[in-house]
Length: 127
Image 1 (cartoon, rainbow, N blue to C red):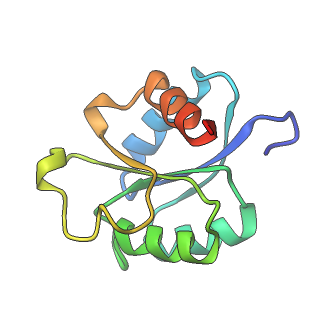
Image 2 (cartoon, one colour):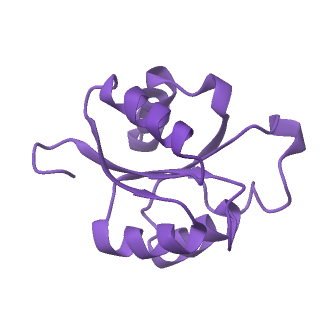
């Protein structure tokens, strides 16, 4: 949680234009604040430990360890972590491990928007 009670979000993507777009989506999503950005899987794992965000938006294709491995490391160390995988893959074409890395879900980047964030968060908090 950020100081104002909003959910802190870590954006992980090696492409600056997508990080900017994700920040705009989150600015339009009530209750969520960007607390950090990472460009690699290793940086994401380190920043998660430092920032303890409530939500991680994780690209799959990253330099170094990919988003699937970074998600696995984060969710193994922090079982309550909520990670949403984002990429340009169609759901049927996701790389091996995407469905077993601990991510809360997958969204194609073209479909990413405030409704997706709110829907994921509502499902996460449902009993």
